[in-house]
Length: 332
Image (cartoon, rainbow, N blue to C red; front, side):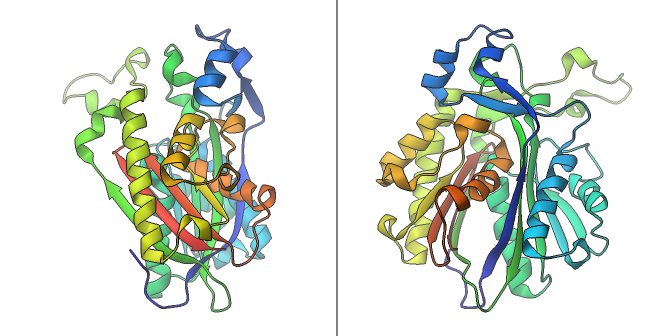
């Protein structure tokens, strides 16, 4: 929907963090029946990052957040609200946002997690925009942080090659002298929940029964072909809706930053929207799919690699389990 005529919510700064360990396609050949060629031709992924033992989403998110805060010249005590988009939080509760709040010393901030899978960061931007436009908050830290290596089935070659770990962050404020969010489109279809899901281990436990043994802890499931079709169609329609609400077309955009699921989805979306290849930012080859962290990490890298300048129009579009999808049009 188009946003009211107020000082827009703008992205003041961004940050990112990825773990040191690199897991290449050649490394995966030692784990599962696959090859570098098979992975690269089907996904466009060459490598992904894997968190170290004990390296939690809040740890990665805190490092991304600190980078964003430093760039913005904002101290942690200035933050009013912390939103963390994640499907692989540190624990069931407290929220990963609370752990992150403590780690960065944001003593004034309220903190909560939100979950819309790979669409989570964009959902978080819309939620943040509502807080800022209402005046309930002046400075919001939005983080996408994932440790997908802990929930991937490393025996399933169709899915384990896709995912990695990392975090991205953005500081959001309303500023009279800066552009920002122009429109958004959100959607979901829970009837397709079985296509892409991760069953919670505790949901398998009944009263009076012992906890689920480690060998039975559920792993992520994805019906790849079905998800592909849903993702391309939903993201294309969502993007078109957001662009129409903003009164813009593809020709007006400097860049399209879509969810980095795999190269085939990115290319199919670009074809459907008729976006020239040079407007599509791609970093899936470096990190794979890092769910809610994909778009903030891509946005942070696109700033330099695509030389984003004040006034450039961007389309951000994502899709994830739920099924969920989201698009945001903004002026940089």
